[in-house]
Image 1 (cartoon, rainbow, N blue to C red):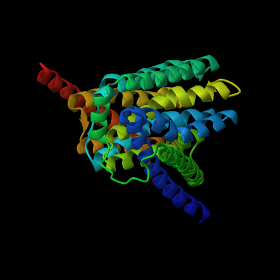
Image 2 (image 1 turned 60 degrees about the horizontal axis):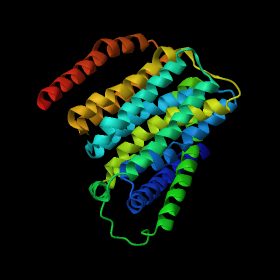
Image 3 (image 1 turned 30 degrees about the horizontal axis):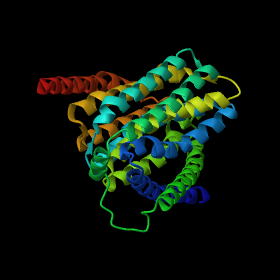
Image 4 (image 1 turned 90 degrees about the vertical axis):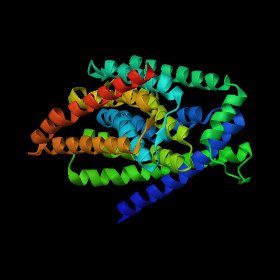
Length: 359
């Protein structure tokens, strides 16, 4: 009963924290002349990724590299498939041109870098330092780039993405900062409660630490992103919603694993199953974003359904694999023979149509 109450309490704190964070960050963006997209990529992404940071760092220091790495890999898969899918079901997501031209390629580049580092079977402290240094450079670049935008352009972008709230109690920057801080605190605490409860539930099912990291903990620590992006979508702040997902995915790789690798007592060992399957799914999810965004500059509701279906299928595969279930072989064949080819063909056709329309 206590575990169930902790689970419900975590969800309540996540919803309240997301509302406070989105409200404060959105209004502070206007006041500082920084676009909502950049706020989503930086302030909101850093805040909502703090649970991943805490869980991975603590796990690595306790020698649980499977949870640390599984948390990041699983969170990035969850971010794109589940969060963007859920947001698209609420309202079709228009994709900002900067996300298509800059942020998604950076996310893909960070993912490729991580795959390269994991290829040898572990992530060394030097490799972790490289990732963390890239995060610092990336964040500084985003802020400078945003401030260079003209005031007219920034105001136009903001007015297109931030709802017309006439309340005055949170117009002062100090109150906006309070909202952001309170929102982050609530998100972190809510996520902690949710993860603790989820781990208890998962252990009762008898699954491995890696699977727990890839699924329960990854989903639990991503609940702030879920709550924040969904709340931003409902409030009409879709740049924050999409920017939060893309920014968090980049931050998880460069920041979370970067810092985790720096503070870990030894290099982070990568499980063979991650090398054989999960890291390739993470890479495929990242790469698949670019053609889908390019073809329509939006994520339609039907695409949201596809994203959610893929995440459910991925999770089902992990559970079947952990239990060595008899249905695993048939499930794998269906995915390889039907689902993957259909996806590749759909993306290819969409790209061809986009190319023809452009010319």
